Length: 345
Image 1 (cartoon, rainbow, N blue to C red):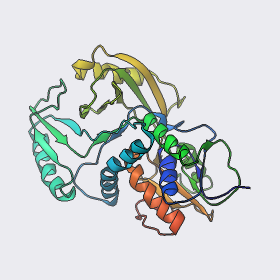
Image 2: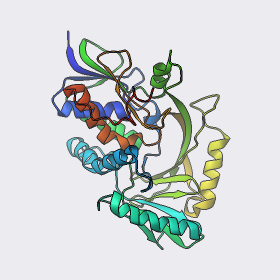
Image 3: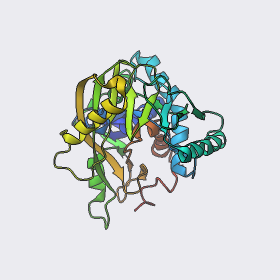
């Protein structure tokens, strides 16, 4: 009978990233997901790795900043080993500035970024749209160099490949014995974690997005009128997304997505005639605190939780994977109270 140091339940971005870091540290790992890798929110199309604004600094923002800095070498190593691209590029992000108040705020954030981003990235106020055919009412734009993007499905496939090269497959059912189990099971995991509690620990929030046939590879991502426009390296552009707490069918698209597509065509003229290649919908796991939930699984010795990525899961994954490996393999707990499962109950 096989024996494992760690069993990872869930083959989304959290589960796969934790598995990879544990394998790198010499652990015997199995990854279990009856639906296959990237079957939930991690199988989407957007993939924006965008930071929180550099102000009102809290542990979540610091954690995300450190993880976004780690992302470039994290994905470069996976690609070097497999030859398979995650679609990662740190091409930055462009945001439109609407008026004088927004311009003053952008300048203030420029100054804050100098301090908080430690010289590793900049928040610039510029007249350049980064190559996008969009108009700013003020004539000014924000361009930050911390934002990056990747293709979620390609990123998951690259992690699956690097794990397979180290003898780890994604399997439908656990086998053998294990010393520790990490539950990275997304929206379904939040539902399970909430059972029997006085309040819910989180829930799945539906999102809808579309993939367009338009080659803008190498350009920065664009945030305009609450739309995320992501120019993937494979010659497609993703646009999204909705945020729906109430829904009938979590996996079907509807008029809300059509409204996003129509709005994209209106505010980004160069995408006005782009063919829609795919419409996607799924549930993204949002914790009650809106921060990732990490740590020991309540009332389950030897079990751990890594959940609640919501809209920033891919950006949080590189650092989160190391933090969870520290805890699970070495018993070294560096999880801030803002993220700790028990503290958030």
